[in-house]
Image 1 (cartoon, rainbow, N blue to C red):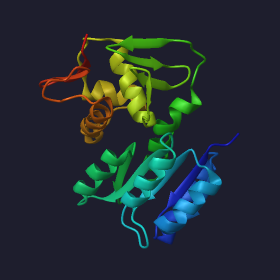
Image 2: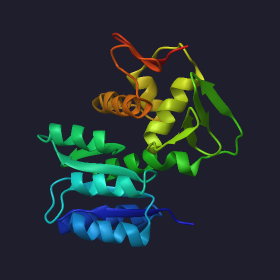
Image 3: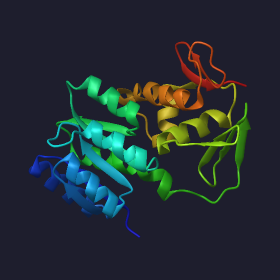
Image 4: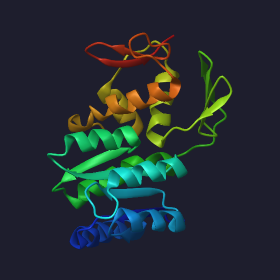
Length: 227
C-alpha cells in the first residue's frame, strides 16, 4: 500500500512541484493551501506524513502542528521554513515536528528528507525486544513507551531517539550519532534539531535538565541515558 503524504503550502507552484516529485517516488499525495483546510484533509485522508509550510493564511503551520499533534501523536511532520525563521523552526520542533527544510530548497532534498523520516515505518522488523531502565519501559515491537505504567505520547522521532539512548545506557552519543540513528543520515545543519527533540523528551519524562534522572548531557559531545 502506498504511503500517504499531505503537502500544505499557499504557494501553488511549490505544491505542484513537490507533489510531482513525491508521486514519481510512489507516494499517494493530497494537498491543501492553508492550515484550516489542511486540518480537514488530514482528518479525512489520514496521511502518514505532512509536508507543511509555516507561514500560511487562515491557520499557520504552528497552530496546525499543535492541533494535529493533539489528535495524532504518531503522524510525521516536515516543516518548510524561510532561512530567517529560526525561532519558528524551534517552536515547530518543540511542538513535535520531526524535521525541517529551508526555502528555497531542492525538491530532491525534500524527497530525501521524506524518505529519512518515513524509513522507520518502511523498515520495521518484527521484534519483541523491550528495554527497561529507571521505571521506563520501551517496547520496540509495539512502539510504545511506558513510565511507571503510564503510556507516553511520543512522536516517531522522539521514540527512536529514546530507543537509541536506552539501547546502550551510559554510552555518550554525539548529536551526529543520534541524527544518523533516527534518520539514517546525518547533516551538520540539522544536528541542533536533536537538542529540541531531547528537550521535548525530557519534558514528557518529567526530567529536570539540571539534575536529570533519565537523559544526561555529555558536555561537548551530546547525550546519554543514565545507567
